[in-house]
Image (cartoon, rainbow, N blue to C red; front, side):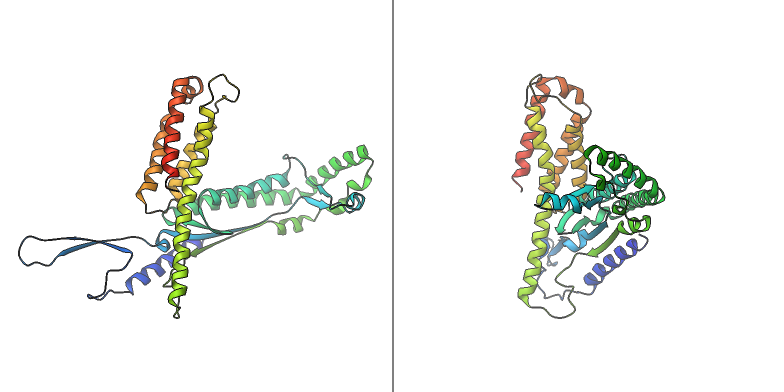
Length: 339
């Protein structure tokens, strides 16, 4: 990951170069992505004072990240059972259960995937968009999880023979019980080196494209098409942020409106914790310039922050539960109006 920072610096340098190499002649119109505020000056014939505020392009606010994972799959085709079944393939589940090193390694790789999805917004299939303001926090957290995943694989490989022996013993017991001796087969298991080769993580960071990236001329139609893709990506990112918050809020409203003591009324701390978590995550991934979107994020952070320290009251007090449900539902309505 030591080259990641260099890549980011290159992306930022590319952005800076594009900005500095595009001077605006005095008689050029104001660019479309610039807001201009004019004010008349009462004193004498001095020229009009013009102050500009430039809206950031998507390429200045975000960077693309692609994380590819390879994992060993603990499933093996049972040819004998497939022939007997006659209507499809039957797979044996090797290393069944969670108390083994195979599942631990797979779990660590899943944590990498979850972290990426929790801290980015979708760009396209297999590629996500990262708020560049949180780039270094993201890469630090991702590197920590990747290291843990690699440690889990190293531990699995070092103890591979023990894990295989334990799983063969498990399947042998099942084979005896069902009278199917072929169920436990040492040939179903790869070697330790083969297992290591089946695990891997590759991370790539890429700049968000812009219409000015092309070194050759492209048609106005193609430029418009690319710009529409960029606009759609930003709009979809905003919808993603809002929908991510709305989902756990609606679940909370559904739970909190059940009267205390009725079936389904049991309150669990995770109901509030999930909203606290999503509010903080969406605050990090948000790339929208719309102040209303940020205001709704801040509203949720403030609201759930209040109840996070009063969970026992929500658990037992019907009045407080009803008030919380109403406040959360009102905020859901305001968010839904922006989607």
